[in-house]
Image (tube, rainbow, N blue to C red):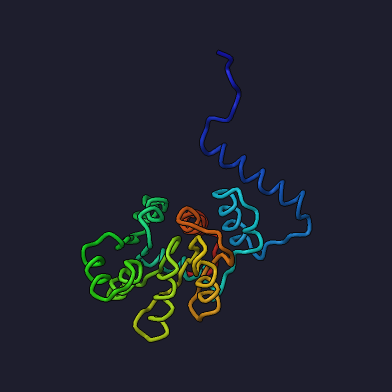
Length: 219
């Protein structure tokens, strides 16, 4: 068998991918400018995860969301995700080094019971349960528009204190609309103003900040 020559070292594969991403941006969007070094890191991580350059234009950052994420991560806060897939994609080793808690309540018995009792989705029930936690928290939503709507409604009603939300549910029914609603709310957020998204993207956005805490100003 012929010995194929290809990159086999993981970090070199990643480095090469990011070089190729920047090369393609330079070639196809020579006038494109990132707003900051950290936004560049986040957007490129989104592209790296999805191979989709639309994120150059559709990722939106509001209310000092990046600094808010850093604050939660560096002050032993808690992350709540809407899916186990999103949670599985986040770098747990780094979270644990920082003392950050992390949960996905979607499969908890209490979530099933509350959803059945109230006639709501499990994603909505999980938000209601998370609201009982007094720890500084952020929500990471990659799948459920109803979770985003519940976060917005409870925050506006003073029944939830979400420091920041990463909201990138994928799909057709209310996916884009829920992200627009979050983007237009007073909650600091990172959203993708499009139908695209997903749990893999949600995790990638968290990781992008985890890997670049040192270039984010503030505490």
